[in-house]
Length: 443
Ligand SMILES: [Zn+2]
Image 1 (tube, rainbow, N blue to C red):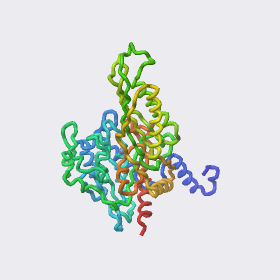
Image 2: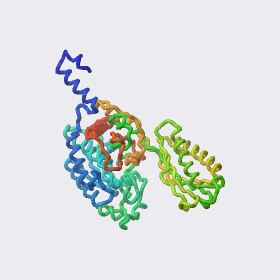
Image 3: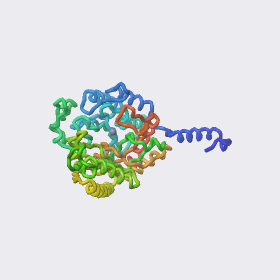
Image 4: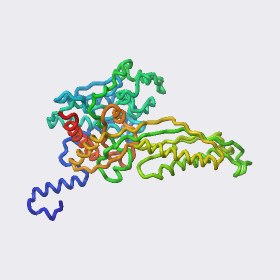
């Protein structure tokens, strides 16, 4: 609507103009959730483990996280939720539904990486509690029972096990993790006891198939796509497949001063060309696939010796597992050619692989519609990072809502999402939950 056309029904026009101005600024018209309450909670949570640079260090299974958990538990109780903690330390805040149906589950995590930020995890966790408070304010009765969840040790910075709580809930992790030791000699079992749990009952945290109607996670994007295109809401198509290899190029170590350039079998020179070949192959296709050589080590590693052996890693990620396979076979071909030209032999072994976790189409549609109803533009995009919701997607339909990360930065004190973008994400979560409550398990 333009001001020139606004001469008939002045009052109506002023309201409509304000609405369209709000939509243009990326604000949701008619918010149900309270941005002030959300911001106050996030600011208070950021006190637990605060660093001088402004971010937090709040590792999973730490005194700091234990205190932050108490704060979150209190918020849940104040919101009138039925609080329970499972044997993996995951926190649930339940709100009853009117029908006997599986639960609609939504939430995130509150642990961080060392020197992490204030939004990765906290937004989805406190956003879930804010949705419950807004439903209470509006006296909404849902058909499905609802649960806000805060998963344990998502980042895995402590004990090196990421998505620990959701992994146990999904049945992917079990008692084998209990004896894992940290630098201080404490085990996962010791920490579960400090969290008030009985490690012997760990598998009781497994969520039975059919118990969850859907899992929704609101999270910051941790990449630049939404921020750079100024789109407030991302609809996650899925969490990408990942494969990692460890490669060893073997040449001949020899004197760096006396070996002529045309007689060398330099393993590091070959590995360097392999690294660029990985980048070329990944760049040669359209799409959002990524490939990284993140580690390289030459031996013997001296300035006056031609490297006889070089170890490096290759990691490929894409939403489509077939694309990862196709890129890898092209990379292997290129490595074969480079081997011949450099006179070395390269062997690669698969060390890690994660299957993609695809977003459920019904949930993607619900998120689109929820954002549309709030006047917010959306972008479909994959998640290059893993998330708790991906674990739960093994037993229930999964959806994820992304909001912009300033400059695409995360896992750092400079991680930032504007309060308006945070509130938009929580509003879309609120509307998504209500849509799913109507659409899933029809009577
Ligand atoms: Zn996270």
